[in-house]
Image 1 (cartoon, one colour):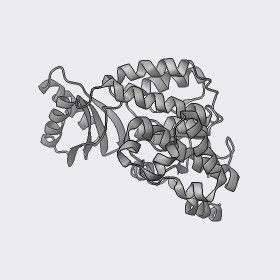
Image 2 (cartoon, rainbow, N blue to C red):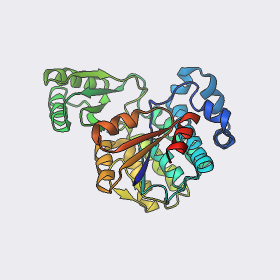
Image 3 (spheres, rainbow, N blue to C red):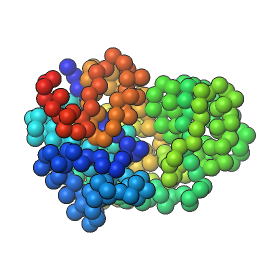
Length: 316
């Protein structure tokens, strides 16, 4: 069985995430402590007790999601004897999940990933004033139809930003841009037969050109960080291709701030590499659901809590 590891992105956060892992395994508690120390902030307490609005704030959600993913991964290493490069042929992550993937693959320390994600979250939030941008999920049409929707919406709303942010599955595509641009995009999507076109509850218009100021911040932050070659290649969001060169990885992480997350292409790339099993590591199972729609023949496993670790151990 040929395995790939994937790590979730923003939106998977929830109060209480990772708590059963931390209560059960000392290596998970150690990860949470490392993140708290790196940020000089008790992020673990916020993850445990809330308030939810503070956890959802992108500067907290991003390192928190990474912390849970790496806690689960460290448990896999310690309790299940999982190791790279023997255990998987590649890693991937959805948006911020790329930082989790790179940390699992040995490119970044947990502390460095936490600091980078705090910088990334703050920069993304600061890039666009509140109320000036948004994101819309378009359900139903395939990519070519959504591309036509974007062109039509831009024609109607001249000067507004309307871009494809995430190609999540064959029938779930997320747009990002200016507030007015998103309103027009919803109108056009419904006219063109989308099953649904609904605004997402996000704090900023991620993965579009409005994030350019944040990309500049990340370029500076990444240039100063000591990123190592990963133990196995990363399937990059913006190219859906394997990458191992640290300098090129940094470039792609900068491009990713404004670029489209090519998740469908990434999963299809894994399939062409011969991957027959994908393990989603971290809170929730959003990526598992997407993968099942993109490539139903690939087996998908979740490692989120102690019960998943036990199930994996029995199945191994």
